[in-house]
Length: 258
Image 1: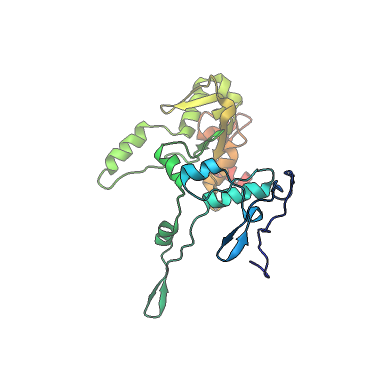
Image 2: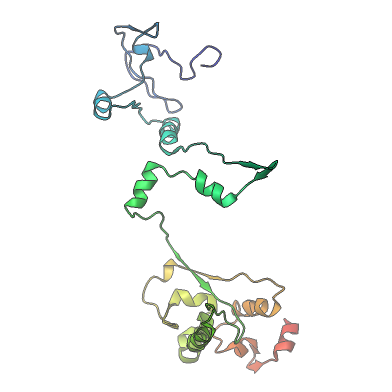
């Protein structure tokens, strides 16, 4: 109740037919009927929400049935399906407030019945139209190596025997003339990376998005290496990125010139 009136505009007016309205809820047909006293007040058809008798008996619950003819009606339905509960956790100790963001997120997270069932059935939560391929940018003998404590030698040996995407691109340009006109960022659209080698792509090139890792200009050597990869096609090695007019320039001189 607000200012002595119902916010939902009850009691409703009697109507001989249902009238649709795209801006508000439909104005349903309501016919005069018998009245009864509820909590000392006389009630009739003007106080009844739209309902379906079969659903009420089947589920033994309050079920409001609305005709979804406007966004307001759809918002009303989804609000009750997906709304969560209000939750705030706070611990007071020695006059100080202790706030644990991770624990607060876990405790206050709400998973609705629909989402829980969707996850229990193992259904996919999302989908993608394109596959993003990250292209590494590293200097010679400086590729990323990950290892576990006590297995450093195994990780180094695996890194020596395995080529990165960038090293495989250099090797591809040595053996495949068709790749000489392609930049490093164009390779994923025409070739597929399989078992540490770039192989000719037969299909799916239009569903790929090639992206290089973002580099800070303060990391000068890798930053300018990235610039060269974006402009020099068909390089058969890192030194060939510095080749201009069939002349391979010294790295220091070439960096200053750039």
